Image (cartoon, rainbow, N blue to C red; front, side, top):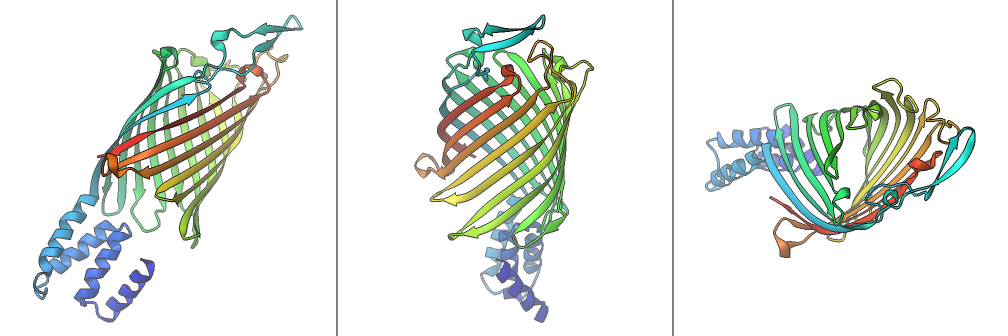
Length: 370
């Protein structure tokens, strides 16, 4: 497409009124995602009085088709079944050491607070509206997702909505996103958040683009308000498209500094700070699309957590998560149906046993778009 665009632009510099070149030029612009520019050129062609017989109908037809891409709404529903070996995100330790009167005392963890594995059903419904304007593009999306198992105490429902505003250009320079999330665990509201994120393109090469990124998230823990805080994040990300074995590999890496400020004084451990590394890889694999994502986060408290645990030691937490997804079309189930398979692993290591958790889940199912 890039070579075709260059050749057509040269042809139009030599002859700006070349109708055949304008017809193809509009098509290439559309294929590259420049819908408004393609519509403008196509409309110019329709206003000409030298169109060959039969061409006007095809130009009007593609004008109608292309207009639909300036404002699109899609809905996706999915049903997946899977198994999680730690549905309740319980600590791995069967014994917890408490420091009482200067002495270390071991207490047995009750079976109801140990990891509970089980099968589950994952249901999700999501909608997205994308609009293209003269200089900007917007996207508004929302999702409701529920994970249901035999034990309703471990059921999880999450609702989220996001609004994104970005520059409309071949190389989008800036992007701003506002989001809200709410999480219900069992029958109780557990967590809510509001976040604001932004990125800006500072360098673009043939393969990679560099984006400084900033985010601020307001976190509220219902029923445990002393845990609430404001977390800020500042980092640099690279987004690369690398050709290999006849396919495009999309690679992403981001390194960020983190700071979590307590909302109420007296929060155990006080403020927290740390850093995070995100790695992502995506490519076409067979008839489908494969995605791999790895995240490493290290967070440390500003002060000792509690005299009851490890003699008042500071929490030093290391979190690892690995996510694998594979999607491929399933035309036998519908023109826009896909088979989806996910594997997720997470591990939290901590100087305090109470916060050491680990879990793995795997699921497979069907997704439909409308």
